[in-house]
Length: 137
Image: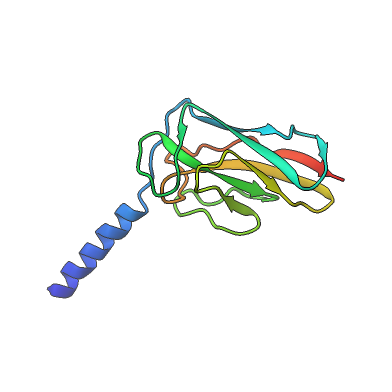
């Protein structure tokens, strides 16, 4: 009986920890610069835009907010029911940053933004930008 109660408690805590936040229907995230097709030099300054929601640091539980994650050269969008990975292709901006400077090798690269909630999980209706392609000299 105690084990069943403990498992139920752990299950409830896990589901609340990974519960997704909803996003407003009109929320849009986008890359302000560079522009799609632009040729740039490394390091590349990338500016993030957001409409219909606010930016809040990771860990802050405030409705209709999130923080940016920059997806670099990804073939597929990350799963939307778990925290976004953190590596060279999934850059986190949990401090609420709205721009960054990224070192990229010469050649063609894709960039995309995905908003994450307080736990780095995409919102119930994911707020995902258009994927752009840039060329680095």
